[in-house]
Picture (tube, rainbow, N blue to C red):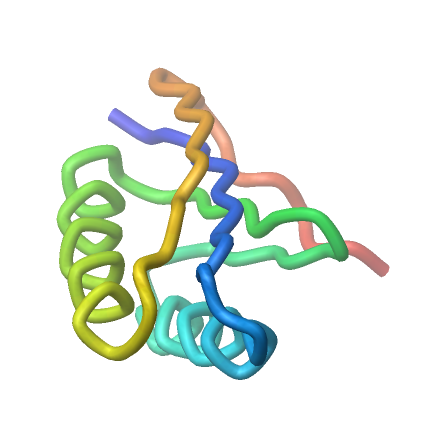
Length: 87
């Protein structure tokens, strides 16, 4: 089953941008994910089980790397298609 996940990360640190960018950069290393980032969140499309496994690993890695992050996720399971990339 395919899914879409919208995720926002809020590191509880003064210098939060590098922590967020590192998390997004790591998500982009997974060829099986379709990742789109905007100013408010990152959207991820892929196989539900694989997306959740990757997010669990990367959220754990982010938590171990710095100050306690807060993650907000919206999950939409059961999608049939991945959206086309923006122009």
